[in-house]
Length: 188
Image: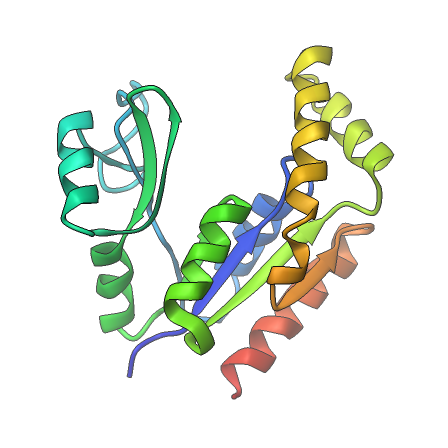
């Protein structure tokens, strides 16, 4: 039997990656879908573990061959995407696939897999809380934070295209809600 798919999308700073990492440690038979990218591999990264590293030429050829569920050219010549073969491999092993993708990618994956996938949108309780979280990371300039807040407003418009919205006000509550959501979907 093929595994089910869990798509997590959220604005930066919502806690999506923390929730996904937590769920991977639980007993849901989850495997993370490794994205493909055309960017150069960093020194500490491993091909097939961190990303599937492809040349820009190979990435474009795979786009032409319809090998991606979703892809995006983040900036000129730098692509990111989800290979259909990666998802098929995980599902054939009887495992469930978990994605940590942007909202456009998340909605595209949901459209492709329909009822086999559960799309979950994670959002902070407010714009001001998102801004506080981004500032507390101490990793971004004021300009970058302002851009991320603007992007959040754009991404929030996609929330109604997701099956479930989890408001991450208190992390422990969000983790419990995510676990319950996965359990309920797997029980169907």
